[in-house]
Image: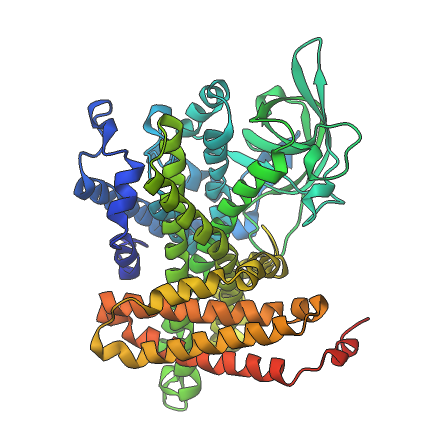
Length: 567
């Protein structure tokens, strides 16, 4: 029987990172639940063993049910009947299996029926599910909405909605509108307070909503009359049982076809306010989007892993001119680069997940007691780094995912273009990852702040000071030189004192930073386990080549050349 967790030793490696002990201690509040719930862990080892066992269940369900259903789900897709979305048979079977295993709302506190999992194993589960079926991972991953309710809603709202997730409630985040895609502050769906009945009413249209017919939906709406910016938006919870929302249609998509993408019409739909008015986009949705971007990172890594494995298997079996094609340099170079890039985005994904884990654990603790000065500083450190790493995860994982899927199909040759092998579906599924939850271009806009503020450089300098095994000093030396090259290039672009030129080069600068960061992370992985030496060496050499090319372009660029690119 297939198990998508136990057959991938990289996952166990990241699950046992040294920082996990701190994360678990904070998340479990020194194991305060052990006297309240018989399934709560009693110490760190018990917690990690619990994570391991649950991930093994996720891996088994994914390998034997989700992956097996992927092709039929892609073919059948969801349907709309009498204003209700009906999942494909395989999708429903997948979801039922995960509900039965108690894996919906797994990051929620135990008092709501959750497993109180930290971000790392939750993200790991998302990667595993995505490897089996990227479209289904969207439905499963929307349990992020439950975490947003838990983090920001009142106790009354939490008690009303959160216990439903353990019983299989589905979720959606209703943000996008026909005229408000990436520019969410342009949202126009209206929220009006009905004084007579003491309830908020929603009216308007939402578009491109993943799993739009969900049981519980988070809806971004304009609650302040006369406003036109983010300050007039609030976040609401809509309960599908109120039956005041119409699913106008299910979109016909290129990929992730098992995940219903809906256009919705709200007509006097009763809703419950989350947190405070006017903070819907500024605070709550920004937090939700960061979680979603981490989710797309996990999805991208899962897709990339699936694509690499399909390519490797085919290259080993396919013979041309008397030998397996994996023996040809043109093919084994592609496969090596694919494997190395999967390792790179995976280590970036889990480094970021650990950063998020720590600061969010402090947030929960702060609701129970005042943090000490040392704890507040620690919280700020992890939050600051999580904020600058999250757009890097979304950018690099989705772009690499597409590159890897492209190369995997290329290795299959003409066969890959047919529907005889899974790579055709994987290739189509990969394409959306650079688009939704903030395009790659928007991730650059978010990440360039870390370049301009010196935040990325500060992290690189911290890592430069860390001890490394003598046999890896030559790799560290390369990274030190790449860091210096990055710093000088940023300085050069900044000294031009031309905002338009700075924006023009922003993607090159962000990618330079990301290359060095992933190089360091792979080096630190190799320092823990020699198995990662190969990936670290290949990736750092690739990073050196790519960054040198970017520096050459920037150094030879004259701001007068901008006109050549304008329309």
